[in-house]
Amino acid sequence: MDGRTFFRTFRDGGDKNGMTELVRLTDVTKVYQGGITGALNGVSVAVEKGEFTAIMGPSGSGKSTMLNLVAGVDRPTSGSVVVGGTELGQLGETGLARFRRDHIGFVFQFFYLLPNLTALENVLIPAQLKGNPASGRARELMERLGIIDIASRYPARLSGGQQQRVAIARALINKPTLLLADEPTGALDTRSGEQVMELLSELHRDGQTILLVTHDAKLATRHAARVLSVIDGKIVDDARLESSELAASDVIRVRGEEASR
Amino acid sequence: MSLKYGVLGLLKGEPLHGYEVKNRFEGMLGGTWDVNIGQIYTTLQRLERDGLVRPVGSRGDRGKQLYELSPDGEKALDHWLAQPDSGPQQLHEDIYVKLLLATRIANGDLKGMLARQKRAYLQRLRDLNRLEEGARRDGRIDLARLVRGALLHTEADLKWMDELSSERFGTEGTKTE
Image 1 (cartoon, each protein chain N blue to C red):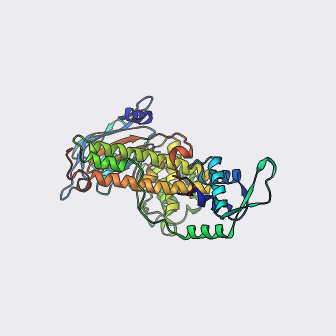
Image 2 (cartoon, rainbow over the protein chains, first blue to last red; image 1 turned 30 degrees about the vertical axis):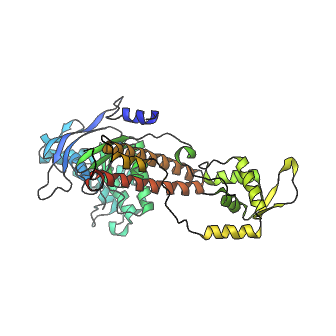
Image 3 (cartoon, rainbow over the protein chains, first blue to last red; image 1 turned 120 degrees about the vertical axis):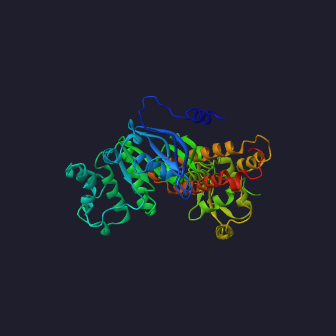
């Protein structure tokens, strides 16, 4: 075992220096009637404020279920889910709805924009539910996400990448404590997908805590420094990756042979 | 992979000195293949002996000699470029043999081995991603392309670890469970 490997292993379980815990799952199980797909089987994990964490695993492994439990759109069969100090299990339906509105921004694979509202109106929905006009913030966000020019268009007239950016603006309008993204690039072409991920990275650099579900290891490791691997409803690995600048020759060796005689 | 054809390829188009060949070779591969100037000179001498390159003019100051492709050299290069890389797949890394042995050895800890290897691949993906970003930022398109190939390879390695970790492929017939 070399020094680097040891250091990584040593950091397992979290390095809490100066960090604040934002999410904690403890012994969480989720059983679905009629099948085991997406079930969780004893998941315990904590996420710190400001982290960009990727959750990876094959389809049906339970990774989206984890996200839904953290978002408060689903309840665990057993175990506890604490977000920002609030035990979600103690909230009733109204309390959960308020929690989601005030603390969670959610971005999905298929955008889920309302077709009969303009891009700007879609962005404003969560703010209006909160009784907060916020159109200044909406325009600011749309400016920043490069979609201000299409603010008055309807979703059907937007590309997939534009729709996803509208969905991200909508997710951010109430300044959520936690941004959750479930395969946000899954319905996009490579280029738009990269742009959306760049955007998430920028938000993270500005301090946004992000939990990303993806099956794309290239994207996950490019943007998230922490990767949780979920298989069959369990977290099988919690990797905190290093971000050192390395020379090309430290990362790749093309194998050469002596010139043939 | 042969330095011979690398040198021939770089000489296509314009004559070069030995050290120019070395610099261009390293520029193209971004330092991922370390060649020393001695290897370049030896290769050029062999290519000259075989009639694939020929000296241009006489040795300049400090003994620098320009070389160009001969018609035979052009033919050899074109032939090599047109040949697909076939033949046995090269698997260089220890992990292939480690895995097979771990399934045979009591306490081989196959699962632990897979988990550690998977994590090493994740770190490699992250390192490659950063390298690709840097290469694109610096306009080093050759290196960026090479890194992209390495990224996709590593992604496949990672999928292999996941497959081996699943019941069907991994723990079947092992003594470790």
